[in-house]
Amino acid sequence: MAEAQGDGNGGRYTGPVAGDATPETDPHDDPAYITRTKFLSGVALVTGGVLTAAILVPVVGFAVAESVQEEGWQWVDVGPLSDYPDGEVGSIAVSGPSPESDRRAYVRHKDGALIAIWNRCAHLGCPVAYSAGGDVYSCPCHGGAYDSIGLVTAGPPPRPLDRFDVKIVTPDGKEVAKQEQPANGCPTNGAKPNDRVLVGRPFSIDEDQNPYELKGPGEPVTGVLANLYPF
Amino acid sequence: MATKTTKDIGPKNPVVKVGDATLDYVDQRSGAKTGLSWFLFRNVPAETSWFQTLGFTALTLFGLQAVTGIFLAMYYKPDPNSAYQSIDSITNEVTWGWLVRGMHKWGASAMIVVVFLHMGRVFFFGAYKYPRELTWVTGALLLILTMFMGLTGYLLVWDQKAYWATVVAVNITASAPVVGPYIADILRAGPEFGPDTLARFYSIHMLVIPIAIATFIGLHLFFITKLGIAEPPWSKRRMTVERAEEDARRAAERERLPYGRREVPPDVPAPQPTRAEGGP
Image (cartoon, rainbow over all chains, first blue to last red; front, side, top):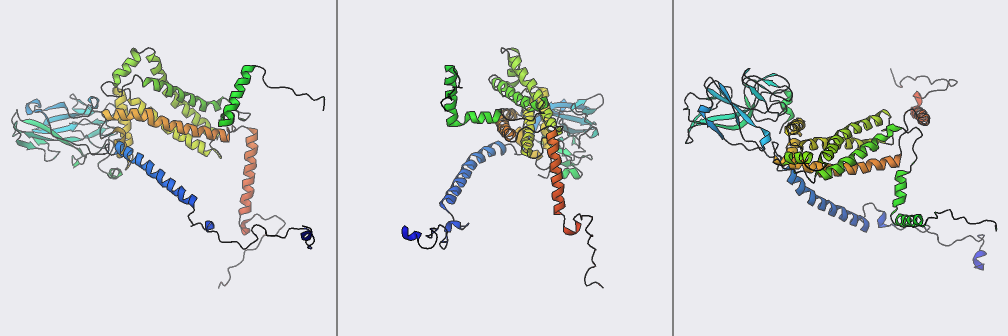
């Protein structure tokens, strides 16, 4: 120690210092180098992601996939033609998933033709009521008003009331008449009173009673805004 | 040195001593006491007033809704055939059922009102500004969740008003462009309201949203504790700080101006505009 003090450096340390030597290239300094820590972090992230997906995908699919399917429809027998005398509007409950849904068809027999109007308001889906006095339909929720064939006369509805397809068959199931054009309805002049009236697929109409795919409440069938719901 | 005596300033009561020791034991191992005093015993601005209690009122109302809701679930049956009857029996037969249901019903309305007042207070006090933006964002999410709570809870009564009001609300959702019809289908578990809709709304009302609300309330409270309560706009200290910040901002803006547009002191001649070189 005494010698080291006498080497002319004033007793300063002259030995190797950390970082003094030529720096070795450490592979850990390369950002692309996969260290054990990085590898295990990646494994943990992927495992966690797979586990989360294994729980969430079935659950969300379970909640969602069943819900977004198209509603099925079928021909529903709503009674003999004699229940719907010419010049009158009959109201008949058709399929609905819950008793509260109050889904009805107003079967209208006028001038030798039947049409079936769905009582779901085209504004936001409340049930419209038919009043025989004025031969009009009116919605209790937001004041939508429709004329005798369901065209909008007042209020917020963006399109006329939806219709159901109608046909008349014999009691043993042979077709007598069907609805070719919504505007003309289903002709009844060739049908007997005990022939059955069937109500089928629901569809939307525009102001000229041209048929369209069934739309939800609030969705217009014509104009620019009809493109808001492309699917 | 000899005159100095040690004074025992700790509690004399042995019960208090044991209690303190227990608290210290827990705190050393969990930090609970430290965390709780960090949460509860913070400095608040001198101008803090009754306006700042609206958030806690909303929190209390959420607690009321949670407790009354948990106990209402003991009697409520989320089935279309028995939902209304079970509500009827809660109201008219179960002891104090009218009271618990009333607390839940009126607490829901009160919560909506208080949440809006709270939001108005934060807005008009400017308390959403830096550094409290995330507190505002979590609060906005809580507002949406609270409204959704109101929507899903309203259907559970399953009378005509509940049914058709929710039909209308879901159809309003359906009128959103492009995805609206799908969201509505998911909400009502199909194209039309049915038994599954009630069960689904019950599950969302009871489990999905309360968990989300509790999570966001936790975040909201963390931000409030970390950042402290904002001073009201009439606070002299806040006005001083804001004025200083504005001055600093203007000074920095001046510094950032490019050379030619920098404000020139009056005793230095302004640089003359030069013609473009190589012109005709």
